[in-house]
Image (cartoon, rainbow, N blue to C red; front, top):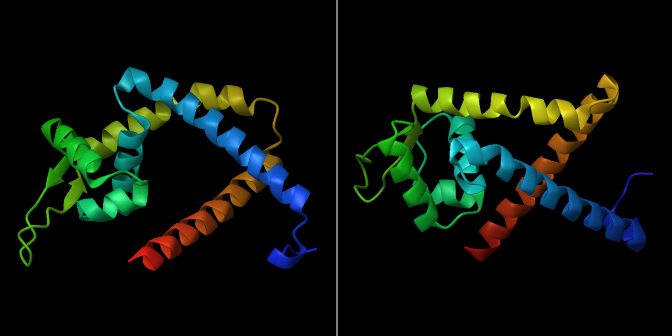
Length: 160
């Protein structure tokens, strides 16, 4: 049976919410431990990963919205990363107030190294899983992420 808002059992909704909260908290804590040796916070990693996925120049305000950080936090992280050569900050030729940010080749390399350092923990986490089950879970998480992102965008548009 396909779930629609009108036929979602309240107890299933509550259980789903609880499990999502537990997974979110445990995964955030795991990432915190994995990122500590790289001197990155979760927010900084999310910013760098967003730039890595996006590819092209991105405004600080758009980054902040995408990774749920304040513009001030994004600006501080971007300045730190620029000093390390991980990102470049440009001038917008149309609007001088805009400072588009791009990840550099060094930034992509650093991001890849950080993500590769997660491998042992992920191998331990996934030990004993069937490959088909993992593929399905990954697909389900991708679909869930897309829906959460769409809801976030709708909320941002409603606030604007």
